[in-house]
Image (tube, rainbow, N blue to C red; front, side, top):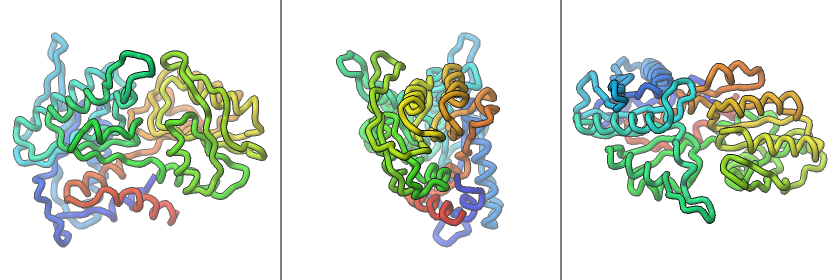
Length: 368
């Protein structure tokens, strides 16, 4: 991940030439499950302003949602938001609390509506892990809804006019959100930096655990000049993964880099690594995932893979608040997204290109 210097020296401020924002006063708000990341982003943002020589205060509202005794959700704003450029944080999936996805989504929608009804100029949703994105199409031969589209409709109707998210499961999002701008933060640069020590090695292969991760792994392979392979996976039933073969040349390969968007139950990673252990000469496996859902089943499987099937390291991000159970695993590492998100907010607030994030991350990585 880019270090603190990356976020700070890249900041645009109101004291910079032509940097004043017509979007209004900057406001960062968070629902209860989004507080952990919003606080870190605020710290990074304020540090960036200080480094740039500006001491302007950034308004922050935390814990804007609450529940009544009958379990209904509401939101309350403890400050005037009229005319503000609001960025609302929420962890839609929060394994560190008893709040599940659906109550968290309702809290988010309620908070968006509160910001809109009380005069915010803009409301940008900051949802690092976009729940329901996996329901982007019906399963084959199943009568299922496109729930990702439904949730997009609800977000736009509530009042968001922009979305910031980290490595979403589907690229269909733009179609779901219509004219609403979406900034999807790309994980390729981050993992290319994490695995830079393997660049150009003939004994290393980057593997996609399924077709959905193939482009992600291909881009990483190009960035690091590595051979790539893809696993052929199917699901006989929901959350059950079966891998029939690995397509690609594994001859003389000793190290595998496995990249995916998430670990849920860990079934896909488990099926892939056990096959590699039994049918190849791979001796070291490094796993990079953008989101870890912190399920007990995944924890058990990762422990078994580390003990018996050559798993050396798992790298993920804090797009979802990580539980102590996972964080204390000796082979498990969490990368902080707060610096990148602080810079993204800064660029949006000052009407600058967010597309510069990836190139800036690459430039930072090349200097380390």
